[in-house]
Length: 437
Length: 162
Image (cartoon, rainbow over all chains, first blue to last red; front, side, top):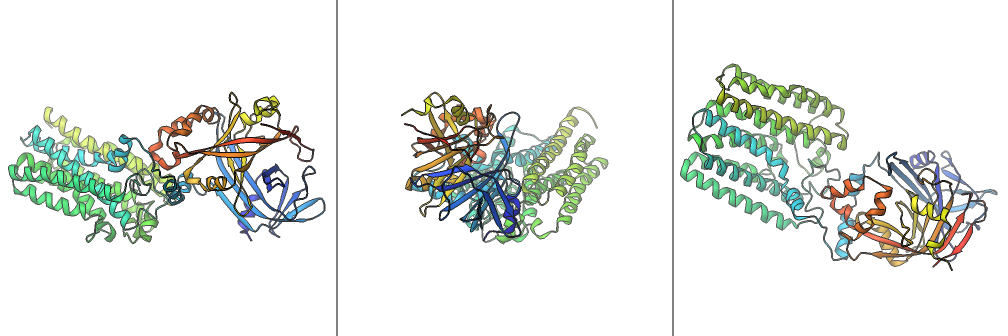
């Protein structure tokens, strides 16, 4: 027996086809007129005069719906299939469905529907002795999640800009710092993929988005987990060698910052620390992309630390932490199931938005404080231009908390808030080099 | 025996312009399994195709065990045709998996006519790579049933084709 909800939905379709296996062994289909009786859980089918008797055969009814688009093509796909045997009702047949199936893209978006079939697809490709194909540039882009490296570039640049303002800047050192930090970032992205796969969080997630749920290269069979781990360790190794060189030439504090960075980034997902699984992932990311990157970049140039570099790192750390925070929202059910205790997986929907607002208020509060007290140049106040975006973002998150694919827009605009705010801070510093403020 | 290309122009219009057909395969237990699919009719070659991503490969398994299939073209809303007819094509299906990565791309000109935005999705292959691992299913028609007015109560015109 099929669920009543299925029949209730079937009643709203106008295009229905009956299918059965004909005497010649070929399937036969024809459009029919039906009436759904929800109370008795049956479907009455007007007997098409052109068909032979369909009694004693298994039949299926396919209820199909599409909405053609004016530009061509269609949208709003949904269909229901019911199976069973017919009974004779004189001028009609009656079907009491024994089995049913539904797909409605409004209820299960196409991306999620596809994700649910990934295991079967990989088995099928294995039988064909094939692996999925993706062009090398896209495979690299996807594996390393390259667009996210902006979260490293801007803090390192701002750290160097603060140093420049203090009278210290060397382009080669800046390039080396950036290269080392980028390699560590690529290392953490791939380590995160490898360990989230091993620990199950990415495997059970059927609602990944371009911003959450990992790169999926392991889940899709684009790369084996061992290859991802090798890429990760290679990136870490190369980044560490650069860090070691900078520590030897610029001072041991670089080694300390680098070691904390290594522990925090590798331990973000990897056992035994598994910081992301213990509710410490957000803090680790905030620390790594804020104070560690900014102070590290500043120290390499200036061979000291400063209040300004420390203070300017706080909004940057918070902003990158908020990227993770918002990206975790659609994953929270899957994370919870996999025992990954992220901030948002432990928060009520109300407090998720409040948490975002509080953190954004802190970002702008620090920028305001640093500028008013003239620790930062006044031109850094340019970063406040993103306040309206942040206000809109909080509303957007609130409106889409239960809607994974609606949140994609919120995740994208949240990343833009980080990029624009950090970029305005950097521009503020650059202007201050030429204009006394 | 006529070839598909020699069928009535109105029938070919249904094959060429329908956005959806009910494509039915037979499971090993003898159950009809129907999928609404985008039909691709090559009017120059007189060949009828559908494609299937490996994500939705069950129908491919069924065809490999039993190639007998049918495709019903009957949707008024989906078919931008001058007159609504119902056309059922029975035939044997052949699964072409010589190149699941790119083989289906040769059908893009036909696909584009039905879904003009398809190229944008193909460009975004990186977003859903497994969806673009696709098998081509060619239907080799053996019998075509035509209900000229789309009326299922009227006896269909049955044509054997080669």
